[in-house]
Image (cartoon, rainbow, N blue to C red; front, side):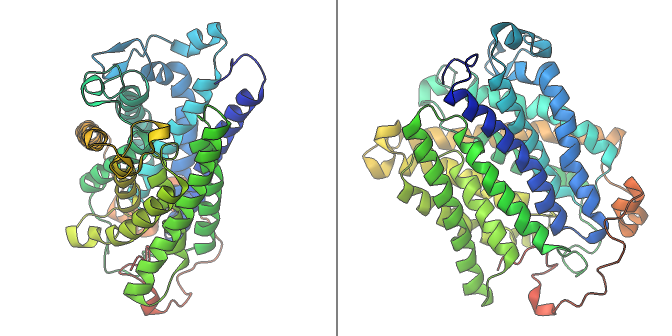
Amino acid sequence: MNDPTTLDAGTVWTVTSAGLVLLMTPGLALFYGGMTRAKSALNMMMMSFVSMGLIGVVWVLWGYGMTHEPGWLGLVGNPLSDLGLSDAMAEGNLIPAAYAATFAVIAVALISGAVADRARFATWCVFVPVWVSLVYAPLAYMVWGGGLLSEEGAIGSRLGEALDFAGGLVVHISAGVAALVLALFMGKRKGFGVDPAHRPHNVPFVMLGAAILWFGWFGFNGGAAQDGHQLGLVWITTLAAGSAGMLGWIVVEWLRRGRPTSIGTASGIVSGLVAITPACAYVSPVGAIVIGLVSGAASALAVNLKYRLGFDDSLDVVGVHLTAGILGTVLIGFFALPSEGPAGLFYGGDASLLLTQAVAVVVAVVFTAVVTAVIALVLRATLGLRVSAEDEERGVDVTLHSETAYDVGFGAVPVPADALTHTGERSAG
């Protein structure tokens, strides 16, 4: 983009985009907070907010330096290379660091939805900086910073550069895989799959959170646009995919349950936005609609796999972010426009781009799973991952924060049995 030391339109847009992306984390707090039980809502929101606090410090001290050259073995940048953003300060080039920080914040905050109702808050406060340092920053380096999957990297130079415009690999796949790993290590909540108390306590919060997320997503996807044409394309594909994702989820609900739901509508928006994130600058508006429809429908089907497979991903981070993140990344291999880079299969290209994208997904999944598992093992053996059964039953708002979200309980509010899907966490069909 333009000279970052000059307050021109490009600079202002990037800084504005960073603010939009930062707003997404409070939006996520509302989205997740509304989906939990009333006695866990504050804790769920706190996990997002404390991620902002921790990563805001980590990113300045060493995180940003780990995402760009100079690096080690194509895997990670040198954390000592830009301590305290000293190099960025000297170059007058702080704007990229500011924009990138907001991505790190939302990436780790997404993971928290998988461990709702039962995670130790102190352990979460350790997990956040460790995971961002050992998983997120290295993956950002591999894809965007000149590492393994970039054009200059050991894999990218042979198979082609992995295309991930705004974070399908780096943010959503990594968060989805980490969520699955933590859910497996932490175990199921008491009453998982059978207790109707595990239902969203405030659906308007969920809808409001989804609206804030969609609003912020235009900065999430559009902040890195290089010119007016690309920004226009990114804006309209983000709109189209979010809309189509919502419709895809609603159609699945209507076919399987006979009615659409508010939770499904909000979740469909997010699934479409996740899927278009890596592809937003490479596909046409019509391609974005197809990607959104496919991801919305696929995510609606995927969220209930946790009941069949027996893992408790409380708020469906895996079903939405991992599913849609993989789909959006791989579908670039079919829908990429030749005018915007390597052509996809539907536009006269060969299978090389599809192979590149598939390999990148495998690398991101395996790397994230292995490193997150090591982190979880260490934390489980030292600090412990989850609260006691008694604290979980009382509610983590009271036991971890000595607070309650409301002065009145929601347990007495009658909820029709047929309005719930299993535990009622999401009516996904």
